[in-house]
Amino acid sequence: MPSAAPLDPGATLVRVDEDIELRMPAEVDAEAIFAIVDAERRRLARWLPWVDLVPDVEVERGFLRRSLQEAAEGRSLTLVIWVDGEIAGGVGLPRIEPIDRCCEIGYWIAQAYAGAGVMTRSVAALTTHCFGELGMHRVEILAAEGNRRSRAIPQRLGFVQEAVLRARTFAMGGFRDAVIYSVLDHEWDAEQGRGPGTERRRPWRRPQ
Image 1 (cartoon, helix red, strand yellow):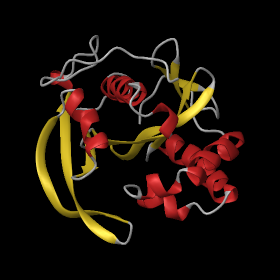
Image 2 (cartoon, one colour):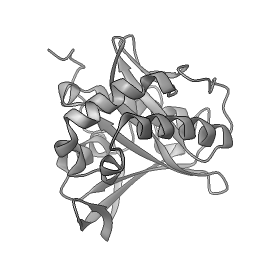
Image 3 (cartoon, one colour):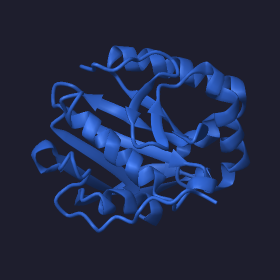
Image 4 (spheres, rainbow, N blue to C red):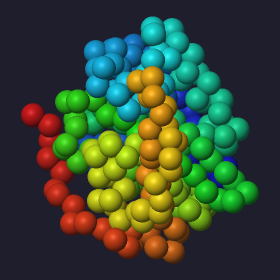
């Protein structure tokens, strides 16, 4: 996976704006991340199957350690969202296919920052990074059909809805249909941070 940016623990890989940055994970982040996940476990686990696989901070620390190794190998990319010096969630590329020049973006956010535009901007900036520094041709987002907030991100950024995949994701003990969205490199406006079918984006507002 080509990248001119540092992969050092805690290094800023993508600067979203003056308030938001996407940093490489570091083991010292484990306690803060686990505290969010544990406090909001019920909300997050409704859509994210990995939540139940993180029972304690040591498991989270091990995941962050493996994430750095996988990033170095170009297999995946895990990033921590920082807003004004505080951890707000995560975004990354759980699947990278270098031969096909295709990757998938996944994300989660703490309740305190939900609905503030943080994730929309983070995903837009990461998409630009994928087409620029990583040389991707296609970026995908997969969201459970019933997860309206998650689906709103690609819709807002102009990703194209392609299909509904039957029983594609598993969470809370059951399979769920998922919607796949995509955008191609020639469709993405890097300066505006949007694709061809973009809804008007709301201005960013600082969480209260």
